Length: 251
Image (cartoon, rainbow, N blue to C red; front, side):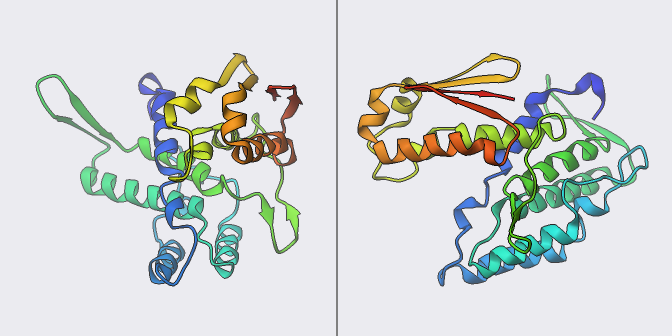
């Protein structure tokens, strides 16, 4: 993506949109077994993937985890009747982007389309370099424990993998899905947002606070949400400070 056109909001929109897009089908049951196993098979057989990709500079793209490790991890999850939704979503995202751009561009480097009187749509081959980093972030965002070695695969470091770090951090903090994930929830979306505060008051500091409304009405969910945030330092290079009604994260 050409520097003068870049906007991080575009990056974050695609990551946020795609990273959990297959999470609704993560558990393999007798009702979705064929579909679940087919999604895994599609990943294994995919010809368009980040591991064979060359950047526009001619250099080979280096992913966070090698292809063999990712596919082994995917199969290990399948043995536990799970579809790793990050791996499947990342593969699907990159494969679909490659297919769409190849069909649109053909041998061209850039095509500009006029969609209406005021808007222009640009198809640019350099965008693929952008998409490969997004796909890698989505693929690897749930990989943290290697069952073969029974060890952590390493802690996410903001300076080394900023996109992964931000995704994993915000995916853990985000309260809506924690408190409103099922029909039995006593809290509505607006109530969660009105009674939980998430403030980034420094370049590398976030303060999360809450009031008694959250704790009193959804104690079990509140404890699980808070504990997940407190345990971030187990798999991310981050410091967690706990207060009576707040948590402060620094990295």
